[in-house]
Image 1 (tube, rainbow, N blue to C red):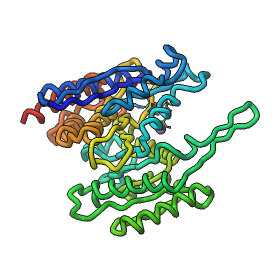
Image 2 (image 1 turned 180 degrees about the vertical axis):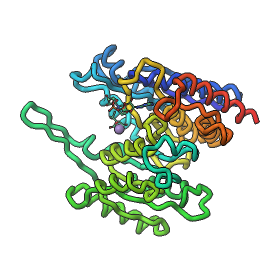
Image 3 (image 1 turned 135 degrees about the vertical axis):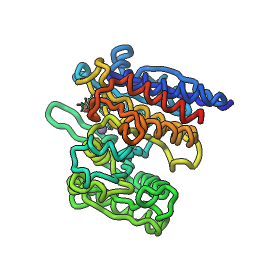
Image 4 (image 1 turned 180 degrees about the horizontal axis):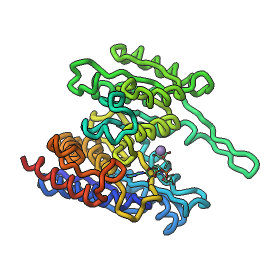
Length: 378
Ligand code: NAD
Ligand code: IPM
Ligand code: MN
């Protein structure tokens, strides 16, 4: 038996709702793979931790995270903590920093062709979109020195070469894994890497561009690297999303924004997962934080309406990167695709509201579990 220790931090608002469904999916994996055990420890982060302990994450929870094989994270924040300082979101930032989870992988794809109709973009433009944002996750404006007084506020947007280098190496390895045209067998060679910066305005952007170019010249001469200013990239991602198929390599702030554009492209944030890891993926087991791209969605919380798929696919990323359980991870991804796919394509046609359907949170979770059981017992 292999035992994995998972720290579960459901967080606030819809966090616990989507987490409940992801844990049901994990139960299915455990049931059908009797040699795998997922030992779960539950704790508080975000607003719920502020309410109980006065801080958005305790030192004890940070240590539990360090001593786990992976952290499954829901989402934190909400209007009721608008006046707390530090706020709920700081808990997540402290956790990323403590685990040195400097690479945040945020894939975006139309899971099955029938889901094109959930996108607000014309079908012929959006079809075939498949890219992964690799967002630098422990530096930049998020972590530079801060000044905050009533009269002045400042966030130092700072990068050193080594921070950019290690992120560039992850982007390059993701480009190899993904492959050109999303062909993960690598028949077409590595995917293109699009580096997004503001080298025309920001000193940190010029360093980003120079160091990234150097890493690719020295270490990855076979991978095509292209630079794009982050503002025009935001526009082009909407106008021609397929144009960025491959890897988008970018800084913390731009990565935050560009990965929410992914939600606009596919129609909702509700299906987009992420993995924050501390090294090149798939090189060995590594600790990481697995969380949806979306937030705590207070506007729909407590109604059973939230789409649990982003959390479920984040669990799949956890199995793939922190547990090296590639087959089980793919099975979850296939199950989600089949649940959402239309009936004429052999799918269940069970979709949540944000994707244009009627299904509630638990109904989607139950359908994924049922299909997954079939896949894992085949
Ligand atoms: P949000 O991502 O929570 O919601 C944006 C919109 O998308 C809302 O209309 C919401 O209903 C919808 N949405 C999001 N996830 C959905 C899902 N799974 N299914 C269906 N619809 C979904 O962004 P926001 O409203 O700007 O932020 C709310 C709070 O979440 C803030 O406090 C913010 O700081 C926090 N936040 C936390 C995380 C995290 O913990 N990882 C990430 C992003 C934002
Ligand atoms: C995200 C969120 C976080 C971020 C917040 C909650 C700290 O928006 O994960 O995208 O800005 O990184
Ligand atoms: Mn965000």
